[in-house]
Image (tube, rainbow, N blue to C red; front, side, top):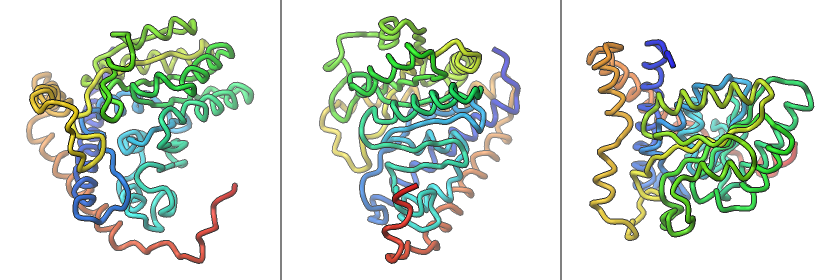
Length: 319
């Protein structure tokens, strides 16, 4: 498909934004300034950006415990994201969600959910609401490969298929569910074939290639929006960092990880943009510098933001 130059550069910017945000979050965690776990999205940036740039603001996503990238790709700002991770009152959830539970409603994020596969039924419910109200909106739940073996996943995909709901199920196959390789828990090489069990299309793409992901996502979103029902989109990638920041990673060989770093989607897309003449080296250096400044400002904003008032601890629990 034809993607204009401005869109390609924006794809690159969002991928770099996610990468720099995650590097900053990992650094803050290691310095003891972030409480709880931080699950970096490094290596999977092309998946979130390729999918989310196929969506409109009114379309909704539901994430996982590894959803900083999903939120940023959908339009969340790094200042409020960082404030949330640091538990500050200026965060998207007023400091109550933290790293694993960020919901940015104004950009179309229903929220990140720590329980594997738990975003599936929430997104399917949103899609049912769209259908009942006659709205041409789409719901996109993200889950990792480990989520494909949960009841939430099977029940959600089945229901969406039966009711022909406007959902695009994005399955990010990063090869590991914590420390378990997907090949040790699923006897299928291509996870997209599971779509056939539910009578919906299954598409498998290179999750390191943002343009390939975007092309598949555009088609799946258009299908859902036009009333043709759900699609399963599998993005094949790799988790280049540990399951969480500071993890010892004793379950995989260093050589395996080093080999996968050769597929890093950001320098790969950087090369594509240069060789195709879409952008110059100076253009992309400017993007990199601007993003670094934005992340630095986000960190400062978060650090200077107030802590939540203990007197409000019981607020915002009920709608």
